[in-house]
Length: 248
Image (cartoon, rainbow, N blue to C red; front, side, top):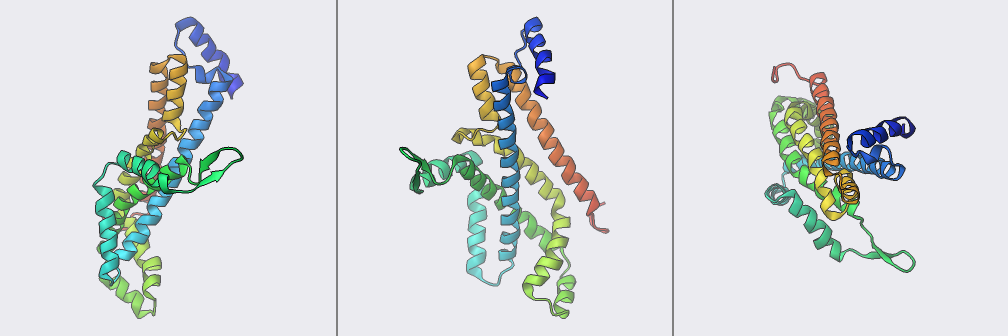
């Protein structure tokens, strides 16, 4: 791939001065590809963690325990009402200061890396919204459906896992799509704690080569493409799983 595009972008630079160095310099190209890989991993794991938190949190909200419901409601209010950037800084610099470090043979590294802190912070942030999204979906499931499952001797967890949650997931998909797309875009904030994702990587490239407009264009197009693909995939899933009688 690199050998095919490198001559084209080298010629573009020589003839026009447009410096897309990440496409014709091997070192910058490798750094660019690494940034793409880390951004995609960050998006995937953050979304996955937020979904797990959303499912479990919605389950706890159906609990008979007022204490458990109160803990989940407190979590929702705390993380929905603070900016994700502040949460990233709090997790990395605040909680990170109390985590142990590992001796790497002459120097120490944190037990939890900046990448892991970013996943935890963004996943917890997105999960706070997903809990409410799944809760609203659960409440939209007719009570007669759960009662029918109970009449078949399903336990409370089996009713939730096999009956209520699948139906709630389908009902919640439009709102869930909006939140997951928003979370995918929010992952770009991870650059503030030095996660070498796309924003951080291209910032280093334009700092070294003074080609800010070109790298900003690449960064813009990267997120347009990735977020559009995620949105298209979720909209396709929404249509495939649509329930008759709900929505259109």
